[in-house]
Amino acid sequence: EHRLFQEALPVMERIEAAGYEAYFVGGCVRDTLLKRPIHDVDIASSARPDEIEALFHATIDLGKEHGTMIVVYHGETFEVTTFRTEGTYSDFRRPDEVTFVRNLEEDTLRRDFTINALAADSEGVIYDYHGGLSDLEQGYIRAVGNPAERFAEDSLRTMRALRFASQLGFEIEGATYEGVQAYAHQLKQIAIERIRVEMSKYLQGEAFPQAAHLLVVSGVNQYLPGFDRPDIGQALAKLSTWLSPLIEAGIERDEALVWAFLLYELRIGSQARQLLRTWTFSKQFMSAVTEMLTIIEKFDQQEFDLESTYHHTDAYVDLIYQTFACRNLPLPDVATMRQQLPIQKRQDIVVNGKDLMDILGLTKGTKDIGVWLERIERAIIQGDLPNDLEAITHFIRGD
Ligand code: ATP
Ligand code: MG
Image (spheres, rainbow, N blue to C red):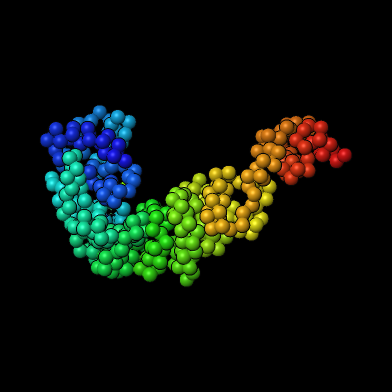
């Protein structure tokens, strides 16, 4: 992680050499102080986007009018954001107008929580204008400034408060918590894509078991699609039961996995896809979750058989297996079943569609081919039919 800071230093130094200020800000400062891993470093600077552009060979405009540029330097990317204040968010996505300012302190005023408003310079000196260090030490999520105003400005912050509580195991400070309760209803106006990011991080948090009740007791659940139901609290508690052993074992919780177990506990069956669609998840993600959901159901019903082993993605099976294993629940012998599989995929069958047409004497485009392939595939997987041409020919001819 310190590697990332090291790699960012030349970027900071070039900005400084040109006469501007540059600081590490946000998550990377917070997480480093907490001795947690960081995944990216964000830089705040007094330089305007055009000025940043002029300083580096490779930059990507991420929204110049909002002050955000990506600097590509020695193969790494760094987000460099101009010091700014924010106006209101009438489209609930982006502030209507941002005003660039020339100093760090003014920039920190727009940040959501004190622990996220810390900055560090290239020498490692920490700038703490809102008591973030003390909140980090005591484990508090506290709004910067007046909580009601800050949540009214952007109510995504209500969901973010829960997300940080779940990731860090922190307590949401009293007035801040009241702000969460009072402004959660405005989440209805926030773009679901933004909420989704925070929701997944909430579900994946290392302290999720301690924060699971917060979504319901704060009332935030009422304003989230598919979460306004009486059994949501129970489902979240059950999700904790699945995730706790993984957390204790230091095992990462995949995003699709946490959603799959949540939907499983909500017992929404075939409506799962619809709910995920409302949350604007990608097709690929929806397929991952629904497939995992099927695997969970089969594991739970002890119906996971040789055919399931063949049809389901190994990586998903392994994730579900691990989750069940962590709770010492009964498990299918997946390893042995995999060894027993005579074929791994349909292409492994010695005959293809064209061969089948020859054997059957059929013409192109016949639906029967697909039906036959499936029948042959199943028989091979079940061990009823050897995967060789002669046996398959006999099988088809019925002799
Ligand atoms: P993570 O490690 O999950 O990326 P982060 O703190 O970096 O956590 P981001 O969502 O990446 O969170 O945001 C970066 C910084 O931008 C935050 O630390 C905070 O200072 C500020 N920020 C982000 N979203 C908001 C918001 N909705 N309102 C106010 N400040 C925000
Ligand atoms: Mg970040």
